[in-house]
Image (tube, rainbow, N blue to C red; front, side, top):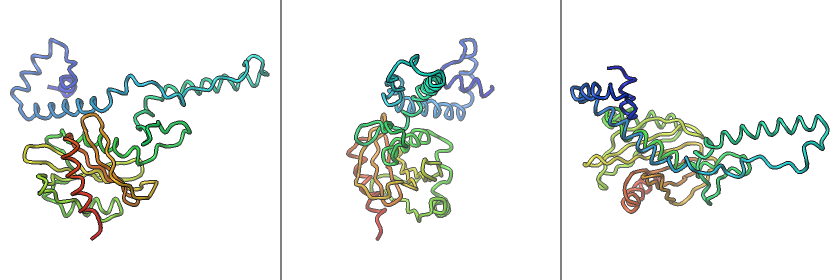
Length: 264
């Protein structure tokens, strides 16, 4: 069975004449079934996060401004410049969908009116929620380095982020460390620590380096699809705790994480 057909099964796009054959193959290969089911769960999580954006209107700031006077009253060279500007404006509109993924500002604005980058604080919860949605459904490879190699994991991620990291101990909250991984971030490398409870519920701590505003903030909460995120800034580092659990439960764990991350 080739991988293209297996991925078509994940996406529900198999031709009818191949569906039965793939189903029989998966019935005889339970490990493959688990792998593909994890992909389906990952797809569902990403749809929950982003499907509402498909119908979102293009921000007004991305529409080209109307000309102040008739283009045909201009000299020839000005008309040509205007036509080039309109063509460029059409390209900006075509890219609007990608910009919307950067998230809205904390005050509810899009952060796009000036064309400047979206502040790191505003994008932090969405980036953390995306990383959570991508990796928590994984069955075989949820982390790069497991908790059985915690000393190596912490030393590696601390070196890459330029800060001595201390993954919180959350046994009293019912969660044990699964492991962690290194991720790329908009402002530098990111560390992700993953935890799980006895029932298999997973939560992730996202540690982002190079925060631009470089000042402390209090707790903030964001809901990204079915993923809740508590996040805050401490110096040049951003922290975001994500899980598909209730806000009250996540708040209790976030407080425990925050207390353990403070200097002794």
